Amino acid sequence: MTLLIAVFGLFHPQMLTVRPASQSPVHIASPTLRELRGQESIEIRSGTRLEGDFMLAVPGRIERRFQGALDIRKKGDELLAVLSVNLEAAVAAVVAAEMGEAGPGSSGVSPLGRLPVFPVDTGDSPAVAGEPIVLLGYPTGHDVLLARLDESVLRNVLEASEGDTERITAELARLGLIRPLATQGHLSDVLPGRLVYDAQTTLGGSGGPILGAHGRVIGINAAILTEFSGASFGVPIRFASALLPAPQKAPSPGTRKPSG
Image (cartoon, rainbow, N blue to C red; front, top):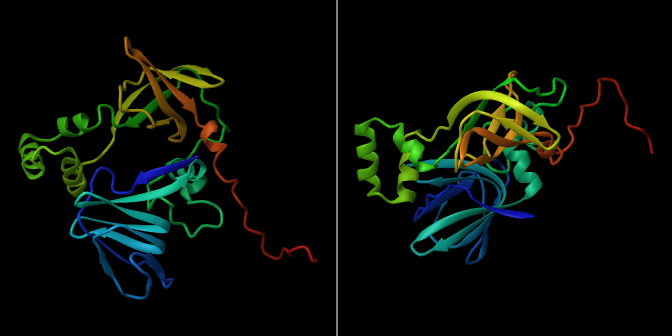
């Protein structure tokens, strides 16, 4: 399965800039193929495709590093930067492999940019009923972000964005105010394919990590009972871990590769 991910979320700028992030060239296809090298940078105002190791920026707002291929699509007067990744790569980037690395054989840069990662539970200390948990997420989406602002900040955000949802997101990102809500609770049941807990959440909170007593991700928030706020449901992390690449151990000093 291939996922299309808007790398700047709901924020669609009218102009982007791109420059190499390393010594490797960046390939740009539109309207003719060319390469960027060294300290070169260009402005992008139309649809194109970028390939390589590069920094993509909304001038004066956001800059992110990417490796691989990225499509810049035209949407009216705005640009939409879209990353195409398969399901396994997306889960590996969001959940992250043990030690927070981007994956075996990688340069340490996540395919979704430089994302923060949590350590993943390996099953050495299985989750048990009664264990305390912390649930992170964005229940109700924008509403929970705006509700946490001081009145003066909220007023400035709404004035700057003129009430437009995409511009609200961009302004909150610019101010560093997009932070997950944390709720606490306990596991009430640990089933083979499901976790049941009383940490409160609601629509919009799906996909958030469930952290166990040792600070490791033990599951992914998935569902709620709309009639009863005391029971939420998550998917055990082993189902996501099965999609992660197997860790590779570095050879011990003095060991030799097999001949032939």
